[in-house]
Image (cartoon, rainbow, N blue to C red; front, top):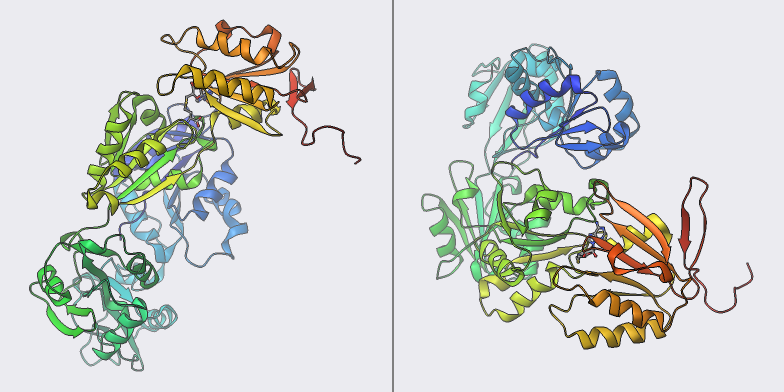
Length: 567
Ligand code: SAH
């Protein structure tokens, strides 16, 4: 598995040059700069401690350009809670020192060496085993799994105490380490895929060299696989991936089985049974067992998964929220990080960035929604990880419905097999309401005033009924150059059912640079105060306002209706 891209965190402009050098070591890593202190970072954060702790909890490798002590104190409260931890490093502002702090098993020393090489200094490695042997035995490279961590720790401390070791089996990376080897040594490192208990003084390392081809018919997939492996005398730690036919792509049992076994699930389009699938994927491997809907292939080397079938494609329709990074949900951030392709209206795609050089951006005009949705399926059906971006929430006058419509209209099986997920965002009405107080605190109605995709007559009817029903109103797409008169007409209809004193909130570019928030009344509202970047919230008969201590007004609609309940 590839390591996640690290977060580079800086506190002042003085570290920017060093941060950029580190970024060259990890293309795609973002530089996070403290608001008002750093100019020109890729992302802005407001609170150092909270930001660092959030990254740590998300398992992101952290490179902090500040004193090691600051990083230690910041993360200290979290240290005991966590089993596996991400690499955390402190780097001197001027790039003169690289100190790995946490994440020894996550490869922090490897990173420290990489960064130090990029900065032309030497890393402050303090791990004895690593110093002595030049590799961390407890953290084998991808393609290999350590049998038992506790045993491993004891093993390394025996080696450090001066014992010799012999190596059984092939592992090129171990050959490069400077281990005190002796063919007669009592300690041994065994590299192999056989299932057995370790002998005394033996450290087992498993190559991930086994593929299991699975049919879609079997039940209890994980236990069937475990049993078949046991029977074939193969350790489950050597399992590298599951392989199924492309017709099984949307099969939830296989997906769950792969998750439970902790291995990727790949798909191939090969006719015939599971042995045929396995043989086709690994022509040089031995088929060690077949039957009952499973075939086990054992290769002599760790498997290169990129060469085996392909992954199930993924399509996520995401909501960015109104604009500010803090208002983007973490699941959306994670989705953007894993994306191969990003599609959307150019403004929103730019808002979702910055992106890595390997991520492909497909920017299109705002009106080409169905075409964009179909393009997204074409890409995802090739096995890519595709993101379609919307502002706010993707289900509110945005791309989610277009994507589902495209799928509904299609009879292409490869589109229906795509792993499709909609990830929500903070919609403009909610972001605007929150800034004003709670104008949508009771029943409310959300409408788009655009008559591009629906007749104006239906808009008038809904406006009339919603106003009559005394719902608070939230207007999206209130006005545009091609729709100049519609808002005026809408306000006339609302005014038939609401008094001129009804509070109105106008939020423009909320959560974006230059945002404005105004609280006025329905009597004061004219269409020239509103543009297409504005959210219009109109109160109900119970919506009220009162002054805020810092100036301006609070607006809210009480939770009750009719007589105020006794409190
Ligand atoms: N999916 C989006 C809405 C798309 S419709 C969401 O959930 O927010 C576009 C309309 O949303 C705009 O015409 C405007 O009325 C409103 N809007 C979107 N972003 C906004 C923002 N940051 N501030 C105010 N209004 C916004």
